[in-house]
Length: 181
Ligand SMILES: [Zn+2]
Image (tube, rainbow, N blue to C red):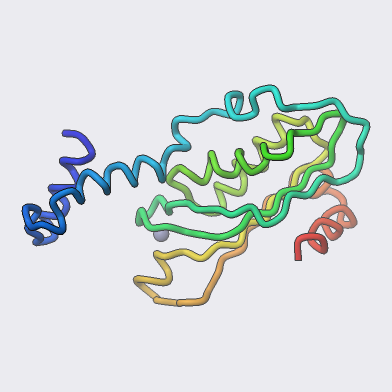
């Protein structure tokens, strides 16, 4: 059974008539949408970095703020939406400008929980750049909290991951946090 047929079965199980006009192409569209929202499974780090790693004597913190993030929670398959802030302290290598956002996207476009997403992004930037430290903060609103269950409409969740110098050195960490606030 392909994804489209499964969506058809889900709609039927919900009590819908999949032959009515409005739903005629819905299984097809829903399958395509779900494939798009999880397209991160088709990517790997090496392919998205594609050699865009450059030698640099810069030892100052590199900060990429407000990276838009769209993901699906792995518990409910509902969206969580927010922003990621990523920083690293280069040790001879810097990433091409767009690549940090590509890394965020690759992991966000998979089924996730926010804490793991944070860690995966941080570890990926660390492994690609060999940086002295990496920091990731994600703020996101979870539809599974807002639309169901506790229905806390405006709560957002903040998670962070600090590696290397951002973990060990409070001054480095607070410099980063003041830059992203
Ligand atoms: Zn959820």
